[in-house]
Amino acid sequence: DSGVTQTPKHLITATGQRVTLRCSPRSGDLSVYWYQQSLDQGLQFLIQYYNGEERAKGNILERFSAQQFPDLHSELNLSSLELGDSALYFCASSTPTEWRGRAAGELFFGEGSRLTVL
Amino acid sequence: AQSVTQLGSHVSVSEGALVLLRCNYSSSVPPYLFWYVQYPNQGLQLLLKYTTGATLVKGINGFEAEFKKSETSFHLTKPSAHMSDAAEYFCAVSATTSYDKVIFGPGTSLSVIP
Image (cartoon, rainbow over all chains, first blue to last red; front, side):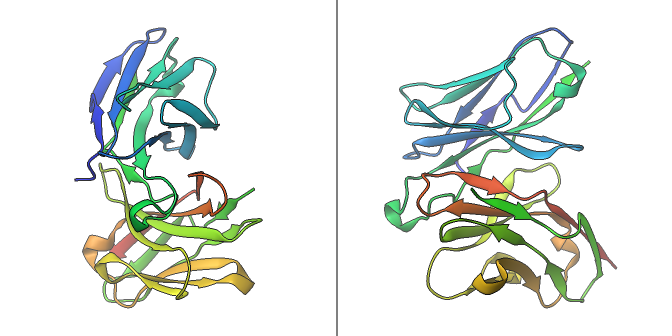
């Protein structure tokens, strides 16, 4: 158990719809990352938040948005869904650089939310 | 900027044989390097990491990796493959001066043949 919680685990929806994926990071972790994993694209970095602020942006579509709340949980919103958005969406969290002896970049992943768009 | 390449999207080895998964990186600053493993239907978990100091690092399940700065490589090895090692392996790099930015390689799928 990584300590990162993602809900829902599975989600089936139709094209054009909107869904929200939720992530609770490990206790004490300030950074949250979102990744998309699909068969043809591999593991793609979407976006990172640190203590409520957007820190880095990757290959995130304009139809997608995210935020991190004061309690540090994060939500990834996917709208106007297309068939190609079907994928496994991972959330990961990390500790600050060298905090408690852990290196920057040591990520703790949730089990993912599997999105199927029909 | 950092980047990671993994040679071979799929590697097959016989049970008991040596496992070698290749990773090369590019980084403009001293990197932190990681190997993550993803078992079927699970999230990624850290296998091992290199930060500073000893260039040969040992991880879980008998895996180890060696940081070779001159070759910009961080190859993952295990002397004897086990059936339970079948999984997807990702190499990742993080710049020590960049706050928490992690770049993953495309992954290598390891199959172990009985």
